[in-house]
Image (cartoon, rainbow, N blue to C red; front, side, top):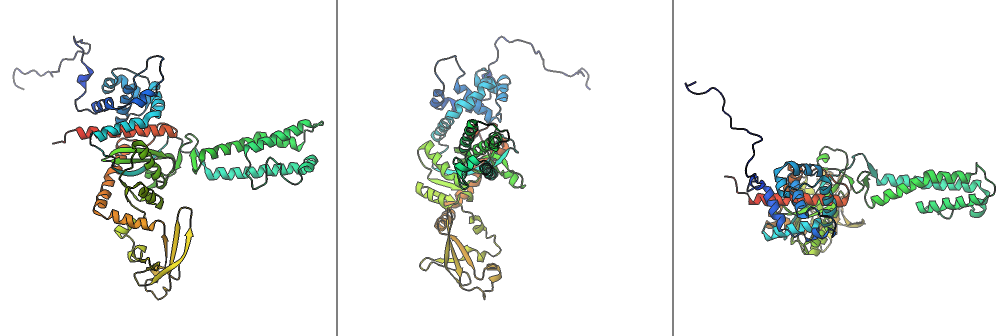
Length: 524
């Protein structure tokens, strides 16, 4: 060590309790390009008339809804979704303090704002932000890329109620009720004289379902007859039957009826979130895992901005498209000119609806990718290799055999036309082409085939190829950003309305984050 150089370490001065003449401003602590500034500026420009009108007049002063909205949106952008954690950040995090003007609403206020005021007006807030995106030239609402994902509900995974089980148990209970009343009729001479060999009038015949109201009236009538009797018999079968109905049959029947009302058209629901349906999640589908309570979330995107959100209880994507596009029209008063979606939406009903809207539909059908890749070992024997002749209503196979119309098979949502060849016994491809039948058969959907042909032409056109390549980076990347990067894989609120509110907040936060990303300079 050179002479004159100290061997002791040198530290910067540290005086924890030193005061300053002018305290520092929170404004100085926020970097100029920070995302919190974009949230602040955008929310200040949003039209929040609907949100402000959700508050009643008079009373004590309240926290301003614009401030609460800024805090809520930035929290979701920051990955903080618990109201208690947001309240904690308002006390400790300089970005939250700056947004709130150093105000500190507690978690109850934040939760009430989210589940009450935002629940009523979240779509108006969403439309207001989209209007700013259109004004900034970031979206046009002319194109929409549609896709869905399943997100787990805030519910117990083992609290399932299955529709089939409810129907089975209710049918068994109805049979027990009828059998009990038949025993009463057989043992009670008075009842036999009045009703003969029939059931009690309030219950009805075997083919008629028994309701809780009918069973209640039957019990009341039996109690009235018991009360009118002069002699009381503790072993009276009618009295025992009334007790059994009151304590066992009626509560169970009321429970099954309530469960059927909750189910509606669904096949399951969760006891801890009755709006949630049991679905197979994408990550579990790869591992053949169990069903979980969840919601089917559908979004529309343009330039990776979310322009439409709907939440459904149906685990299948196909029937959700019409409701999703109807919601788009309700929000903006227009239909998108171009709709791009994957094969999950390629049904005759959806093609028909898109045609009625005047939209150009770049929507795949279930066999499109298979046709393009030629994955079948015998692709020459696939139905696409058969040539159709509309004048004779026949198909011709690659070996020159003619397939004539055989019959139609009608289902609820489709009509299948069956074509059969005359004789395939001498064909060298018989073993591979038609191993089950004496001659090759084709099953065609008469309703959807014209739509498939039109979709095939659109998807293979130059614009179609471009839209197909864009779809993978449009919607899929948005879901990846939300679920993987944002770690949003499970809702924190319960009930369909609250779940809709929560995912709209997620979508708003995603759009703000995307807007902020577009303002950042490209790295050198």
